[in-house]
Image (tube, rainbow, N blue to C red; front, side, top):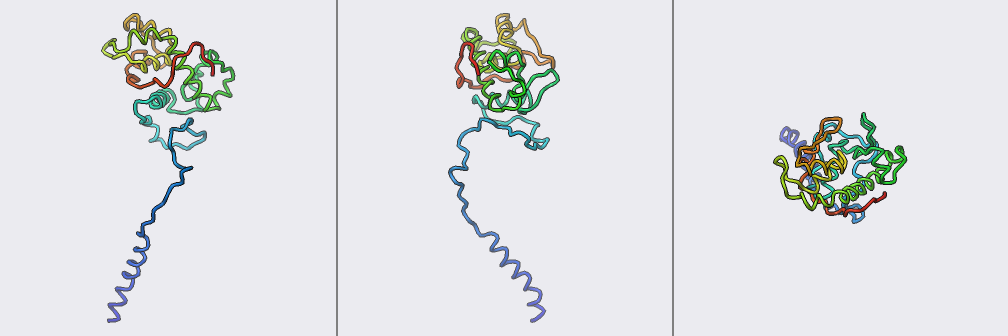
Length: 209
């Protein structure tokens, strides 16, 4: 009898302790801590990122946020604080010439200000929509080289190569195509970034940040 009690006592104690561990308690998240809309800055400075997180872009659907985050991943893997080998800056890899057109003249401030970078991206989309407004009306829905032309594809290509080169590409029906220094062409961006809804941004003539 004593031998049986000696063997069974640890099991009984373990069972009692585990029963406390599985007691369910409902945890309520305060309203102030709930995330109800996308944050303007999605990549905090000095955040440690595991290598596997940089293998695929964030999936945020076909919304405007999805568009700009996918484009940012292609440009810089979403890093606000990077400069590439050609001197292009930040999350969306802006050249200083393009920034100056939008009223941004301090490259150091721009590189260290994620909010300013987001504003610059929105402003540049509005600017390119205005420049390409007639081409948007004419070409969206048509196909060039087997690729359907969409507004988002045009805006991504304009970010890559400039709105003037996108005009030449469209009006030559793909005969005029240029690539950046890393070999990415207008046609590739047209295809890769087609089908996003970017109606969130309206065209503006000469907008400033």
